[in-house]
Image 1 (cartoon, rainbow, N blue to C red):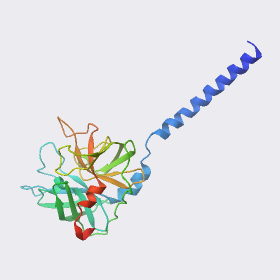
Image 2: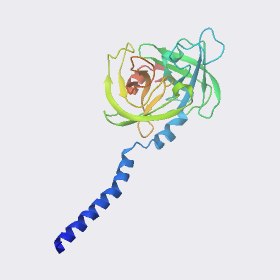
Image 3: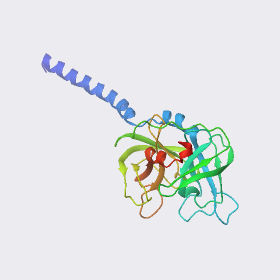
Image 4: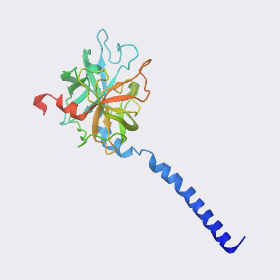
Length: 235
């Protein structure tokens, strides 16, 4: 091998070594780091425990195939929560569990069945979640904070699969953000947030044919529609 050949071979080896060293870091950066979103938004997320007709205890009597609980989000002012209307629409009473585990009675203030949104009030100073300034673009990373299967508040992440979905067939009035972030029974009323922990949508529906479990096509009511559904006295 000539001197030039040795130099070229050495350079190729150096480049290969450098690329192998950089690739793991690149892969790690490509993964969604949701720690900031969790730390920012989690203090505003509540477990919602409705008591269904004919039952004395919360968590019983929910329709077959659904979770007995849901999720709520502290919004706009202390003591005000928002959740999915279908979580509480038939409830005889509603309790919520705060981020620190305290269980409180909640009162339904207003309900908009056309958008599947309900507003609750609790007798404590809650920490309202920050609202995103703009709707996230398709492909942007987002995370869902919710009470999946009634197990307690957790976080899953994905991307915005589509925006401004209408005519899906869940609600009379629809303006959905579609996401592949994992959503399951009990997640209804949870928060879809950006990586800054700001609310971009309220978890509402799972698109599925054979079961109520996640298949990666999930829908959140946009923050814009959520605010339009807010009773005038809270605007």
